[in-house]
Image (cartoon, rainbow, N blue to C red; front, side):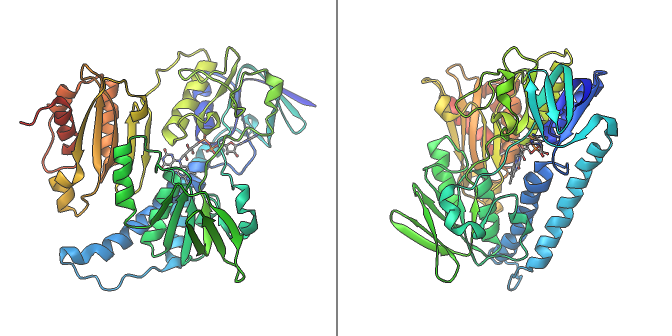
Length: 451
Ligand SMILES: Cc1cc2nc3c(=O)[nH]c(=O)nc-3n(C[C@H](O)[C@H](O)[C@H](O)COP(=O)(O)OP(=O)(O)OC[C@H]3O[C@@H](n4cnc5c(N)ncnc54)[C@H](O)[C@@H]3O)c2cc1C
């Protein structure tokens, strides 16, 4: 076996892995990065970016169709599927290329192609190569989509986010299994492109929203654009004419295509984690410290979607950097507030402490999107903003279903990080007319200030 030594070995050259690599090198370390795929990242290839490109196209169609309400005459709106997919894939490829530039800039002697597996707590093997890491090993292997077994009878009609952006056309009808952020974003986009979409979920919440009032607002807003079947446990079968039939207690549909958006577990299979002696949770994911990404007191780190904690891009990037830094002797980094956005319209945003974790004496203020002048002017008046503070008024979090909710979420994240209280938050410069004013209204409501 060919044996090599380095300071830090990194498994996975996605967002987290590339950041970890750069952090090690920036501290003068010698790193080896192992990648089994073509490189690029989930975000650019099959995640954030192609989904936002699809959403952007869908928004165009939606606005064109709605233009008449503003006195703008557009005429019939139709979708040229070939051009739609061509733009999405062309722009997607540019995003992928920019990540590949980073990857290919790594000197060849620091890159190993193949699947890595542990052979001990300080070493990994890739094919017939053994890599011994003297300062740490970073697991940055990401996550992967799962297709539930119950879809086996219609397997050929099932897509995941890894294949859906390769469609040549648009189906007439489609079911989305899973009402999480990923499922909802794509469901609304396809619906706006003219596909009859039904979203099916066993639970009664959507978009990961924990606050029952914003959840209800989101269901009301999105339920206008596609069918939402919540609390529905579906089974699947193939129809005589080769379509997918989904049945649940009280309902049944036949569709051309099914998108499985039922979760993305960490990609840890095949890593032979048993050889590391790491403590793991019930799902087999190593336990780790959030401020260092270190697993127990080992020199193994886990960052990005691989650790199943906040599976979003900015946490993958930050986690990779932290893991690389700490492996090289750098300091821990304070966790930032949790922050998640579903880029539906209205956006579904939760930031900071979630509703179900609030202390009993928490104070909550809210503002209805229907009362916001800017949202009304823009013809987007559905949703609700809820702001949380502790008994002393210090901001804890927010649940936001609103147009431009992504920007409102960033403001709340910053305010929480700065330790702001609701009074100081309300007394900022809030320009009129903006959707941001809803945060001021919610803060005033929380304070009982109706001046
Ligand atoms: C459809 C969709 C939309 C999304 N939209 C957003 C969004 O709008 N905003 C947001 O913040 N987040 C979004 N996300 C989440 C975001 O894409 C992920 O959080 C992020 O890409 C995770 O990065 P990562 O580095 O952990 O994993 P990845 O980028 O997946 O990298 C993991 C790498 O590890 C490699 N690998 C795995 N196992 C091994 C092994 N044994 N040996 C060698 N290499 C291995 C893989 O080949 C891969 O290249 C979205 C995700 C999806 C699926």
